[in-house]
Image (tube, rainbow, N blue to C red; front, side):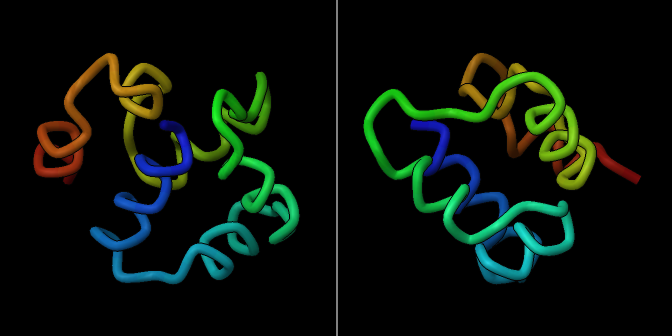
Length: 74
């Protein structure tokens, strides 16, 4: 689920998954691991991903509307 949201955020931002990972400071291998069911980043990485996309950590897990947060961002 996390991977699907990450992928959708990348599409909304118009960047590839690997480019977003590089800009966040992550490896492509890290993103690939997120494809596994139940896999998701922890602590600091979650904070970095949320900050990069301008959404809350809750939105990264589908507990808040990503589209509403993205459209409300300045």
